[in-house]
Image (tube, rainbow, N blue to C red; front, top):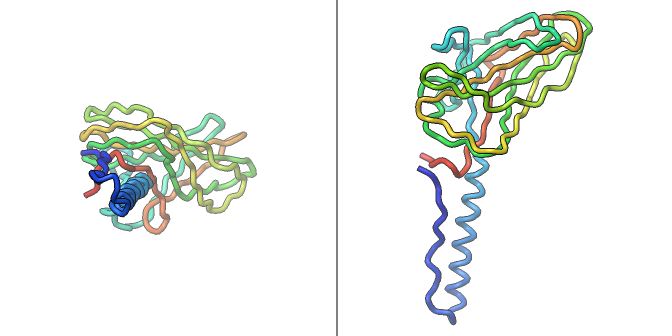
Length: 210
Protein backbone atom coordinates (compact mmCIF):
# COMPACT_ATOMS: atom_id res chain seq x y z
CA UNK A 1 0.00 0.00 0.00
CA UNK A 2 1.29 3.47 -0.81
CA UNK A 3 0.38 6.90 0.49
CA UNK A 4 -1.60 9.15 -1.79
CA UNK A 5 -2.68 12.67 -0.98
CA UNK A 6 -6.42 13.33 -1.18
CA UNK A 7 -7.25 16.87 0.03
CA UNK A 8 -10.36 17.52 2.10
CA UNK A 9 -13.47 18.58 0.23
CA UNK A 10 -13.44 22.39 -0.17
CA UNK A 11 -16.40 24.53 0.94
CA UNK A 12 -19.17 24.95 -1.62
CA UNK A 13 -20.03 28.48 -0.51
CA UNK A 14 -17.68 31.16 -1.86
CA UNK A 15 -18.74 33.78 0.67
CA UNK A 16 -17.96 31.85 3.87
CA UNK A 17 -14.34 32.89 4.46
CA UNK A 18 -14.01 31.08 7.79
CA UNK A 19 -14.84 27.78 6.08
CA UNK A 20 -12.15 28.38 3.48
CA UNK A 21 -9.64 29.22 6.20
CA UNK A 22 -10.48 25.96 7.97
CA UNK A 23 -10.16 24.07 4.70
CA UNK A 24 -6.73 25.57 3.96
CA UNK A 25 -5.62 24.73 7.50
CA UNK A 26 -6.59 21.08 6.98
CA UNK A 27 -4.74 20.97 3.65
CA UNK A 28 -1.57 22.41 5.22
CA UNK A 29 -1.79 19.96 8.13
CA UNK A 30 -1.98 17.01 5.75
CA UNK A 31 0.89 18.30 3.61
CA UNK A 32 3.05 18.77 6.72
CA UNK A 33 2.25 15.21 7.78
CA UNK A 34 3.37 13.88 4.42
CA UNK A 35 6.60 15.86 4.61
CA UNK A 36 7.23 14.42 8.07
CA UNK A 37 6.60 10.86 6.84
CA UNK A 38 9.03 11.40 3.97
CA UNK A 39 11.87 11.92 6.46
CA UNK A 40 11.34 8.55 8.16
CA UNK A 41 14.20 6.06 8.19
CA UNK A 42 14.67 2.37 8.93
CA UNK A 43 17.85 1.14 10.61
CA UNK A 44 19.46 -2.28 10.31
CA UNK A 45 21.87 -3.22 13.11
CA UNK A 46 25.02 -5.11 12.11
CA UNK A 47 24.71 -8.10 14.44
CA UNK A 48 27.29 -10.67 15.46
CA UNK A 49 24.92 -13.34 14.17
CA UNK A 50 25.68 -15.62 11.27
CA UNK A 51 23.31 -15.16 8.36
CA UNK A 52 21.80 -18.19 6.67
CA UNK A 53 23.93 -17.06 3.69
CA UNK A 54 27.34 -18.65 4.10
CA UNK A 55 30.10 -16.31 5.42
CA UNK A 56 27.67 -13.38 5.83
CA UNK A 57 26.60 -11.76 9.08
CA UNK A 58 23.04 -10.59 9.71
CA UNK A 59 21.79 -7.03 9.39
CA UNK A 60 18.87 -7.10 11.82
CA UNK A 61 16.12 -4.49 11.72
CA UNK A 62 16.62 -2.35 14.80
CA UNK A 63 13.18 -2.89 16.33
CA UNK A 64 13.75 -6.66 16.49
CA UNK A 65 17.52 -6.64 17.13
CA UNK A 66 19.27 -7.71 20.32
CA UNK A 67 22.57 -6.19 21.44
CA UNK A 68 24.33 -9.54 21.76
CA UNK A 69 28.11 -9.87 21.83
CA UNK A 70 30.70 -8.03 19.79
CA UNK A 71 32.19 -9.64 16.72
CA UNK A 72 34.89 -8.63 14.29
CA UNK A 73 36.24 -9.40 10.84
CA UNK A 74 39.92 -8.85 10.07
CA UNK A 75 41.33 -9.00 6.55
CA UNK A 76 44.67 -8.11 4.97
CA UNK A 77 43.88 -5.23 2.61
CA UNK A 78 45.84 -3.71 -0.27
CA UNK A 79 45.59 -0.89 -2.80
CA UNK A 80 42.92 -2.68 -4.84
CA UNK A 81 40.25 -2.67 -2.15
CA UNK A 82 39.40 -5.89 -0.33
CA UNK A 83 36.08 -7.13 1.02
CA UNK A 84 36.22 -7.22 4.81
CA UNK A 85 32.69 -8.25 5.82
CA UNK A 86 29.24 -8.78 4.30
CA UNK A 87 25.89 -8.33 6.02
CA UNK A 88 22.50 -9.51 4.77
CA UNK A 89 19.03 -8.80 6.06
CA UNK A 90 17.03 -11.78 7.26
CA UNK A 91 14.61 -13.54 4.95
CA UNK A 92 11.48 -11.40 4.53
CA UNK A 93 13.24 -8.11 5.26
CA UNK A 94 12.83 -5.33 4.20
CA UNK A 95 9.76 -6.81 2.48
CA UNK A 96 7.73 -5.66 -0.50
CA UNK A 97 8.67 -1.98 -0.50
CA UNK A 98 10.00 0.86 -2.59
CA UNK A 99 12.91 2.76 -1.04
CA UNK A 100 12.62 6.41 -2.08
CA UNK A 101 15.50 8.55 -3.33
CA UNK A 102 17.67 9.69 -0.44
CA UNK A 103 20.82 9.22 1.58
CA UNK A 104 21.89 5.86 3.00
CA UNK A 105 24.14 5.98 6.07
CA UNK A 106 26.52 3.19 7.08
CA UNK A 107 28.33 3.33 10.44
CA UNK A 108 30.91 0.95 11.95
CA UNK A 109 34.14 0.74 13.95
CA UNK A 110 37.41 0.02 12.21
CA UNK A 111 41.08 -0.21 13.11
CA UNK A 112 44.34 -0.81 11.25
CA UNK A 113 46.57 -3.14 13.22
CA UNK A 114 49.99 -1.72 12.30
CA UNK A 115 51.98 0.40 9.88
CA UNK A 116 52.09 4.04 8.87
CA UNK A 117 50.10 3.82 5.63
CA UNK A 118 46.80 5.58 5.06
CA UNK A 119 43.62 3.59 4.44
CA UNK A 120 39.94 4.19 3.83
CA UNK A 121 36.72 2.18 3.67
CA UNK A 122 33.61 2.19 1.52
CA UNK A 123 30.48 0.06 1.20
CA UNK A 124 28.34 -1.34 -1.57
CA UNK A 125 24.60 -1.97 -1.27
CA UNK A 126 23.02 -4.84 -3.18
CA UNK A 127 19.65 -6.50 -3.45
CA UNK A 128 19.70 -10.29 -3.35
CA UNK A 129 16.86 -12.27 -4.92
CA UNK A 130 15.42 -15.63 -3.90
CA UNK A 131 17.92 -17.59 -6.02
CA UNK A 132 20.95 -15.75 -4.63
CA UNK A 133 21.63 -13.31 -7.46
CA UNK A 134 22.99 -10.02 -6.13
CA UNK A 135 22.42 -6.77 -8.02
CA UNK A 136 24.49 -3.70 -7.15
CA UNK A 137 22.30 -0.76 -6.12
CA UNK A 138 24.69 1.81 -4.68
CA UNK A 139 28.38 2.43 -4.08
CA UNK A 140 29.18 4.78 -1.22
CA UNK A 141 31.56 7.65 -0.88
CA UNK A 142 34.81 6.62 0.73
CA UNK A 143 35.65 7.41 4.32
CA UNK A 144 38.29 9.92 5.31
CA UNK A 145 41.82 8.58 4.97
CA UNK A 146 43.69 7.83 8.17
CA UNK A 147 47.02 6.26 9.14
CA UNK A 148 46.32 5.86 12.86
CA UNK A 149 46.27 2.40 14.42
CA UNK A 150 43.51 3.02 16.95
CA UNK A 151 39.75 2.45 16.79
CA UNK A 152 37.97 4.80 14.38
CA UNK A 153 34.25 5.54 14.23
CA UNK A 154 33.36 5.63 10.54
CA UNK A 155 30.17 6.96 8.94
CA UNK A 156 29.87 6.76 5.15
CA UNK A 157 27.01 7.82 2.91
CA UNK A 158 25.63 6.72 -0.44
CA UNK A 159 23.15 8.84 -2.38
CA UNK A 160 20.32 7.31 -4.38
CA UNK A 161 18.73 9.62 -6.95
CA UNK A 162 16.15 7.03 -7.97
CA UNK A 163 13.73 4.87 -6.03
CA UNK A 164 14.71 1.26 -5.36
CA UNK A 165 12.05 -1.41 -5.83
CA UNK A 166 12.30 -4.53 -3.67
CA UNK A 167 10.14 -7.63 -3.91
CA UNK A 168 8.93 -9.55 -0.87
CA UNK A 169 11.58 -12.21 -1.57
CA UNK A 170 14.48 -9.73 -1.91
CA UNK A 171 17.02 -8.97 0.79
CA UNK A 172 19.50 -6.16 1.23
CA UNK A 173 23.21 -6.96 1.31
CA UNK A 174 25.87 -4.55 2.58
CA UNK A 175 29.53 -5.21 1.78
CA UNK A 176 32.29 -3.18 3.43
CA UNK A 177 35.72 -2.84 1.82
CA UNK A 178 39.11 -1.59 2.99
CA UNK A 179 41.75 0.03 0.77
CA UNK A 180 45.37 0.97 1.52
CA UNK A 181 46.95 3.88 -0.33
CA UNK A 182 50.17 1.88 -0.44
CA UNK A 183 51.48 -1.49 0.78
CA UNK A 184 49.24 -3.86 2.78
CA UNK A 185 47.88 -3.98 6.31
CA UNK A 186 45.20 -5.81 8.28
CA UNK A 187 41.99 -3.85 8.80
CA UNK A 188 39.44 -4.97 11.36
CA UNK A 189 35.75 -4.04 11.46
CA UNK A 190 33.84 -4.55 14.71
CA UNK A 191 30.06 -4.96 14.99
CA UNK A 192 27.37 -6.10 17.38
CA UNK A 193 27.24 -5.34 21.13
CA UNK A 194 27.56 -1.58 21.77
CA UNK A 195 29.36 -0.70 18.52
CA UNK A 196 26.26 0.95 17.00
CA UNK A 197 27.30 -0.53 13.63
CA UNK A 198 24.36 -0.08 11.30
CA UNK A 199 22.81 0.85 7.97
CA UNK A 200 20.14 3.56 7.94
CA UNK A 201 18.00 4.01 4.85
CA UNK A 202 15.07 6.25 3.88
CA UNK A 203 11.51 4.94 3.90
CA UNK A 204 9.37 7.98 3.11
CA UNK A 205 5.84 8.32 1.77
CA UNK A 206 6.29 5.39 -0.63
CA UNK A 207 5.32 2.86 2.02
CA UNK A 208 2.43 2.54 4.43
CA UNK A 209 2.98 2.92 8.16
CA UNK A 210 1.74 0.15 10.43
